[in-house]
Image (cartoon, rainbow, N blue to C red; front, side):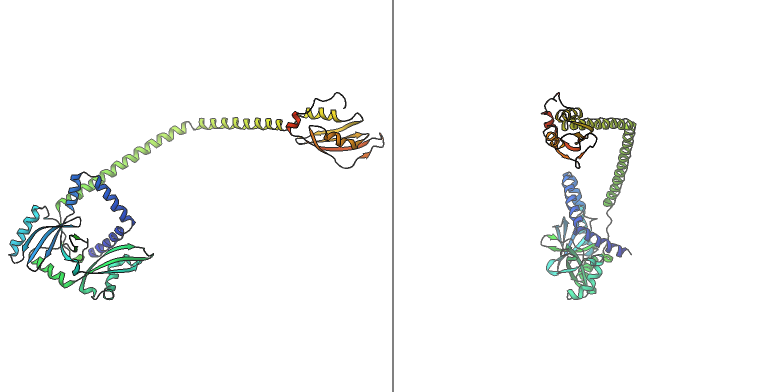
Length: 383
């Protein structure tokens, strides 16, 4: 169960590290590390170091892997007594404060088969099993005869594809080197690959064979980190509570003046409506002549033999109904008025049998304001 959980964690970590989230986290952590004091940066880098073991035919090279850079510490003869050799290695590691650091067997890159593969993106959720099935097809080995690990190079390019590098090494070489180290009291937490003076950050050793080292300092640091997180959560909760309290006070103050604000808005709306109405009336008064001006002008233009039975002055037009001895001349006279325009008979004229006058009905449009402003004063004659 623990092995399956570790494999799932390894796959999830690889997915996050190779995706956009991983890129952002690497940039963010890098910026945070740059913001730390130099002493803190040194301690952080110091805590992440790994002990490297490179066995040869007759010697064992011990070094330190710090930020993927290998620094050789000492070289020991394998022919020496196992207990004495272990004691000398421990002395070197203790002087470098590496006694509790994980120990990795390093293989040279030419000794490891590297194969670039493209798999469906859906295979990432169970990548270890998929690569085990593909091993005999992609490499000259069977999955049971090799140790392997992978590095995701690119995800979803092309769409739906996963591009990765598969690193494979025969089990016999690793088992022989691990047994030689184990006989000298040196257990392994992993197997990595070195390329020149750097490591690739792999672990070819299966999870069930990895020896976990418990670092008391790291455990203490984890406790301190958990305490810092708890304190940060308390501070954040208190900050949120104070913010909510301030928001409540502000809402109460707003509610206290809400009625007054609504009353001010209502009065402002009334003022705006009154101003709009006054402006409309002023505009209408400027656009059209006054009714008394129209009445005076109609009295001026009508001849003495004409009188009106009905006069209707509308917003845009004037209707005149009456009797005249010569109704045909009225259209011309009405059009001569500066206040009236487009005069026309409404229907045909007819003769009044009782008076002998022509009955007429004329419609005319009111002229715009500029024409009204040029209107002459009404004459004294006419009706």
